[in-house]
Length: 296
Image 1: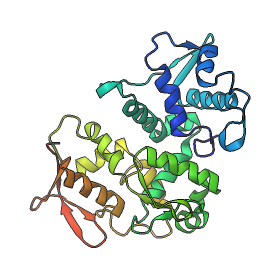
Image 2: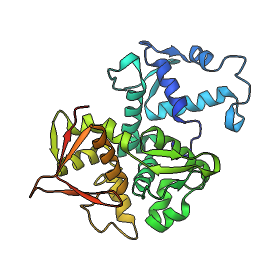
Image 3: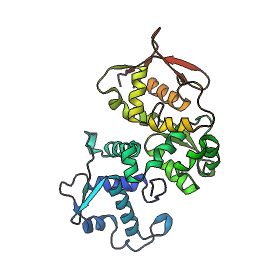
């Protein structure tokens, strides 16, 4: 069962479970936790989209949290799993939660063990698309997938509208997409700006600047759904029309780096005679040979 196809595993529910247990050294009994999450007056009432009881929603969310390693349960007590803690302002747990989920979903071994291997393949395909042509929110992209990556399309599990929408909620939450419009006119734009921004400390690893090949390699290790990463390479190899030039970054990645540069988060430099990659903004291209940490 995949995070794409498991509707109770929406980001808000999993985060609520994590945040409720994060500051409890010894965990909480399952019964006590259930009494917080599903008061007796609500436990037998309809539970949202499917009409299931809210206690059933809690059980399924806890099951997903255990599968991800976010929560452990022993002797009837629930406690947070092996989640690296971060120093945050005001005790905000969301950055560490999002970082943990990202590592699980994008690590081939951990994703496979948790039953979520489809996510990285689907996301790598999504990020390879041209953001100038947003995808529809409500219509599953089976035809596009089949046309673009052939037999690998089935590995994405984006086989119906429900799976596809659930995938998009996770993609936006993890910082890889922007939603535009409302209702039937809602569209989805590939935009990994926030995901790259949050990965920069790990990418630079204390360095002030990286040559472009070092930067792309480190980024691909941290976010393998981007250029040169394992999931992205698998998708590109499956394409009926592979990218013509490896030196050209996708428009989605290029625009994300441009946005971070304009914010002062990074500086994009071109050095004569140095190895370079080409950022493709759609209307123009720019040669970049070094990426430097910004002042912000």
